[in-house]
Image (cartoon, rainbow, N blue to C red; front, side, top):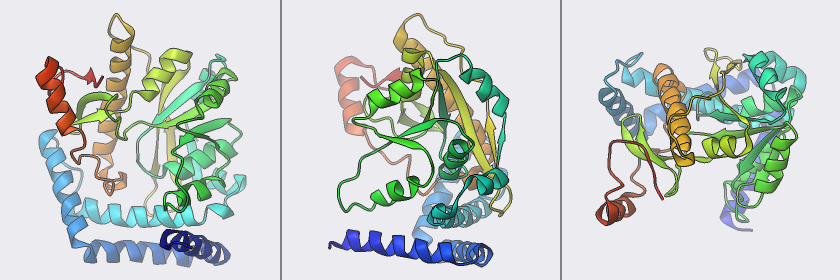
Length: 318
């Protein structure tokens, strides 16, 4: 057994232990671990503080709290998120109904009645894993993509716990047809809308940084006719309770051709995500370095070739 496989086995065993113990003491322990990590992991703390400070400066916004406090709260919040993920095997419909309030549910129901399906687009804010489980356990036909993990990779741990969520999971590389059928059967497809869009994404400014945003949510909604609905969740204090909000679908498109409409919808989603993240930065996933340079060499080559890749107007990468 490789080292990663051993780690995966240990984490699953630890999860079983946590599931057998009372929850409240475990939550206190998780919060304490978050504070300890904030105090001792200086390099990560400073990286995130610098990132958050830079974003508010570039966006010309006043942060809702001192940067130091925002980052400290983020460490505690995601320690609790990790604890909640480890306790996924204990989830059931009654627990999720008690802990996750689905606001704007009538908007979702109305869009589903149109018979073309719904695409839910959400950022890495709050607890997107437990939000998906709450939607699925509420009786909605929720589908999502996952990136197939190689045998022994630690990322397979997420797939293990997601199997308890009730979400129908599709391989991102090979499950497109099944996801398409689900939408055509008035299903729901959940997509994370703030991750790296790779070289074929939409290059644009996101939180003051020139990055590639995923074109998938806009593409899928335009090709299938499914409604594209923004969605987010927020923790209530330090409790295990979350308030989720379904927002009206993105429907206003500027542009004559298809690519322009994809860009328009992606920009609309991105501007909405920026606003909700700036309002609640303590619950955003800063631990993933979203703004790490990833495509600079390729962007420079494209700019030299045809002058398309530069800061300014959002544009397709390819």
